[in-house]
Amino acid sequence: MATSSSSLSSKGFVLSKYIADPQSFTGGIALLNELWNGVAQSQKWQEGVFYALCAAYALVSLIALVQLVRIQMRVPEYGWTTQKVFHLMNFVVNGLRAIQFGFYWWVFHIEPKVLDMILLDLPGLLFFSTYTLLVLFWAEIYHQARSLPTDKLRPAYFIINGIVYVIQICIWIYMRFSKTAVAVEVAELFFSVISLGAAVGFVVYGGRLFVMLRRFPIESRGRQKKLHEVGFVTGICCTCFLIRCVMVAIAAFDKNADIHVLNHPILDFSYYMIVEILPSALVLFILRKLPPRRVSDQYHPIK
Image (tube, rainbow, N blue to C red; front, top):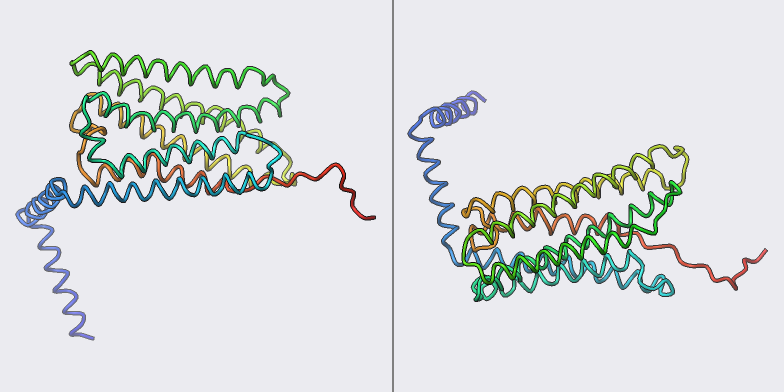
């Protein structure tokens, strides 16, 4: 026991000496910096990361498609409900991202540069439309529960998304004919603004729905489950859109943080994993419950 104790104390002494030694600490930082730069310059790391992103997006897309098929088989008579459209859009968005990262070398080096921006921005715009559809769904539930008019909610959703796409198309046209960096900065800032708008939408209507559900009687059926569902989805979506808002705003003024170029594989992986892949996967998991089967009008239980 004494030998073991002395061995541990000697190791602790060596470790504390290493940490306390400024030269050793500086050497450690230099080594980490060298490894970081080595990863950034490694073609194999870039390929590995982008193909990993491709696989992750493809998996989320497949999950959304499977869930869509399950919902359609469960209630085929309901047509295209908000739930079905939400899963379809998730399938499309994540599928486009999977294709984008699967052919990353061609996408990131396509000419003219504006086509590169379009290919990278379009899935992001569709991601915005997909999750603002969820905000619309919650807004309709809240308005119906409060006996408020709902007839203007859907037109507002389509008008807002229409304006966003029209402005983005105008920015792309401006970028095509403008050779200055201002056009890219405008595009980045606009994307940052719409991301902030989506986050605010989740806070407003997710927060309202959460508070309303808390006021329901404790014995209300499904109250606790719906509280958790709304709370978790609001937190996840608000966080991912706020992170995107900040990152894109930084990228508008700092070209070293540009998310539209082959930058650092680990940073690229972390960014897309945090702002799109994990939020999509978590939301699909939380909203995995299938709608109840419709009971036929001709069905009469045996008494």
